[in-house]
Image (tube, rainbow, N blue to C red; front, side):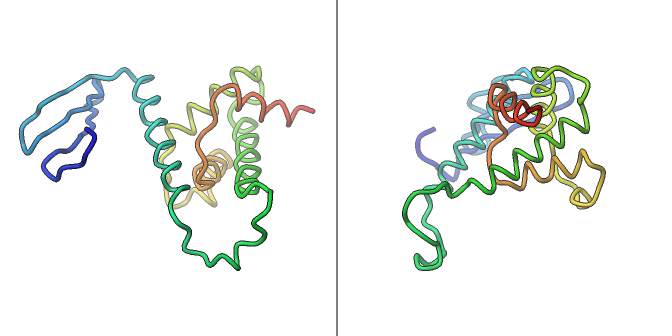
Amino acid sequence: MSAHHPSQRVALSDDGETIALTLFAGSEEIARTDLDPLAALHLGSELVNSALRRLQRAPLSVPIHSRGSARGGDAASVRRANRDNAIRDLARAISADLSLERQAEAVIRRACRYHPLPGDPNGPAERQALHRIASSGLPVPGKRQARRILSLAKQ
């Protein structure tokens, strides 16, 4: 669907057995596809990444003079460092005894499934780490990047 029409919408449903994506025109269902859990995770990740790219292109509401130097640097470096530290903390909390590969898989799986709760910032270590990953505003890394992040903690 290239243009948004008020009468068109996409709905996601999960009845505990089937994850379905349905396209409606008005109240009429015009297309439906069932997704396996991995396809749903991939689609969700792609949607989040697309939205983040659009948000990053959006004009900033902060005046130019208060943004700091316009030369060089990485605007997301602090957020990335905080997210990466949270990823390491989460791996220690849930899978310290596993290989880097399995730790990366476990971290990605939990971070993709995470839904924030009010007490998470002060809750158990696992929920605190998940909250920090989500609140970084950065996407959950892929397995290769997560392994690299976790390997830096082993050095």
